[in-house]
Image 1 (tube, rainbow, N blue to C red):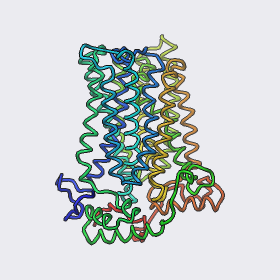
Image 2: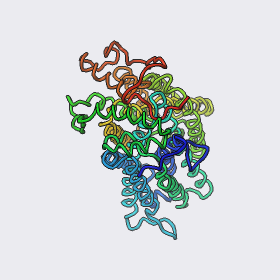
Image 3: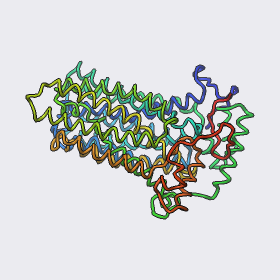
Image 4: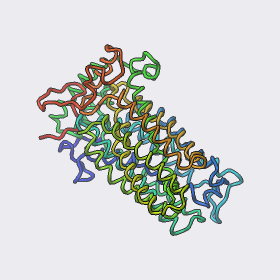
Length: 528
């Protein structure tokens, strides 16, 4: 049920210093942090001796990568289920279900091989329980990643959608940093032979879903969802938690107009994934966005951070501390992402980000080669510049690629396809990262530092494809972004430079007096 209307038009009765709008951002940010926490959690668990003994696997076994990567398959399936539930029952019920599923999966992971007397393989059942837990948790987190960007975007103004989502993804990095810090702390304190050194970071993750499930009832449901279900009274009540009654009525009229314009235009996955479908073009942009993000290689860097630093010549302990430092820098540099994404634009950040990453990985190939093949070169001559380069590469990814590919699918679809579009984004993200995280350990063992060169090449491709085919969706209403695809059909081209005279290569420049109608009207604009 929606919250009772706020008498102050957006104030919060829970946290007086926060408006209801801020509560939405804070909730969404904490939910997105779940994914980051999992990455940081598994990065040191993979090298814990007790964990490896419990799972009955060797450190260099491909099963290490399978346990990590199977989570992403769960994410892909969870995205489909959650998006269907979000359209059928609402964004909030879908999010709550995903949080409960995440909690269950986390518990299964925690109890895998659990024994008060020490490590126990459960007669071979521990790996099965771990794999089941990873899949179940993936179902929940994948659903969260599919629905939260939609929920947040539908409650953000046109000029602030990027800022809101980038702030949420900064919390993603906070989750990663939090997990890795706890993991490193208990590893130093208890040692890699202790089972609690890998179980404690797992169970701490329960704080996220429990906290979020306890406060979700305080948040408004998306008014756009209510309007799609012709529940105008509920939409009005939801708006009144954000606005005064007078302003809520005005926004309701605008949403009604947008709904009337889209009525009858139901969109299914066939329309999105089959050539000739009404939403095939935006779906291909969504698909390639996630493929290209995976090709940047940073899913691997996040999960296997310590191993990356070891390729530069550091011993295990130094590599672990440097990974922590890299994550701290990552978190801080994400401030630049939410400050620039609505000013510079999504497209430019991604293109220049890919170019920067390709350069950094090419340089890292050189440093890795020197570290591994030229022992006469002083260690510090490689370790210091190599570390700086990796820190710079991480910052570039955070600013250019982390949030942008999640934001674009929430901006380029009509309301009738937005949840499905976000689901497609998570599905491809899951499948692509499944492949990357599965193959990365194999790459470490066989390619060594040449793996950096592979990432340099894949980043070059990602940058080229983005420059060629990804339109700039920032600063435009949902309806305005639809015009790009209409023009692409008329012009017979997907090339951004050729569609509508290259209008969508850059952010638009608008007069403040421009009138807004339909979905161009923001829901969370601050009143003057």
